[in-house]
Image 1 (cartoon, rainbow, N blue to C red):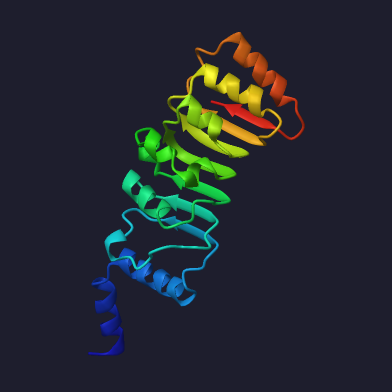
Image 2: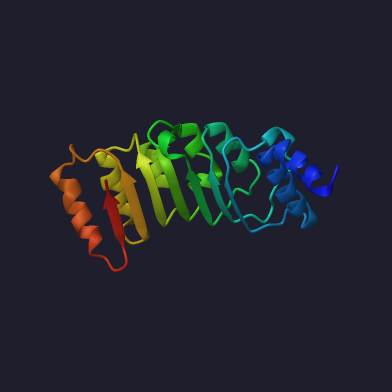
Length: 193
């Protein structure tokens, strides 16, 4: 059997996800898992065989997955204080996967300055008002018009960018007036979909 034959046998019998994970985790281990930025866009990450215990220096986390367990697993691997957090789903899960209130209440989410979710998030009004994010984007499920009004009144000087995707049909005039008031403040951006 020649060298080319051996390669083709290896490639045919290879689990690419697992091999890619082993390769990446081997390099993470060599640097003591002290990486500042982690971006993983993989369905069905092989969590059971992972050697990652904790990523102590991770400050920027971007995870694309298709279930809540994967997001939760990754958040358990990073410190409570991040600089940026992005949780993304695949297009077909975007409108069906909802991050529940207990999940969005995790410290990694509540304290991060930059927050981006490509899915639905069930923040309560109270959780929304307690967010430390200066820039945020998510599909709002439970936030009421009153909660958004309160946010705009309290935080109009501190946020930089807010993108909320939710139902607009029931907005009251007071809410729309608040948006106009804040929209003109230098460098601020509010997008409502």
